[in-house]
Image (cartoon, rainbow, N blue to C red; front, side, top):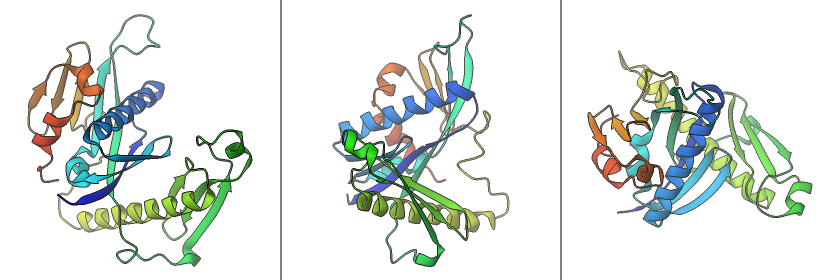
Length: 232
């Protein structure tokens, strides 16, 4: 199996603060899964990670979609079950030769970083925000200590996002196509995580799994194996 690199990011969906907490829980789940697989991880921003290892994109590509949670939020005083969603997007790393970007189309801005380099990081403008002016596509990288590293990561992520945009344009030309990512609404779901019933359901294959806490701790092998060959 070949070495691959993918970007996995959480995009905001339905449910306010609980949706943000759910997004953070999902990101941790994928980080734990990647660690168990021995894949290399790099946190790019608060909601985006870069993963490199054998068969990474092939394994994770069908994780793109709306992930719904049903649980009692920590902020809920009356014990009511809430339904929230978070959207996972998995993008492959795209080579420079596949998508060429004109430097004139780029708008760079720099702010103080939020990485793990101590106080120095917070004084130097290491964090990068990159805008592709023709499309308005944005990529950010802020976790590395040096601006040049973050510049390279942001540019690579931007290529992947432009690829995603081009693929979506192609798919829109196919009659009746609906984006796998959807709009983040509660009904557009690929998977439901039901905490009161200790159950995960993948709606595409109609299969359930128990031991939800183990799954949230990165025990995703069985689910990934059954869903990674689905046709999007």
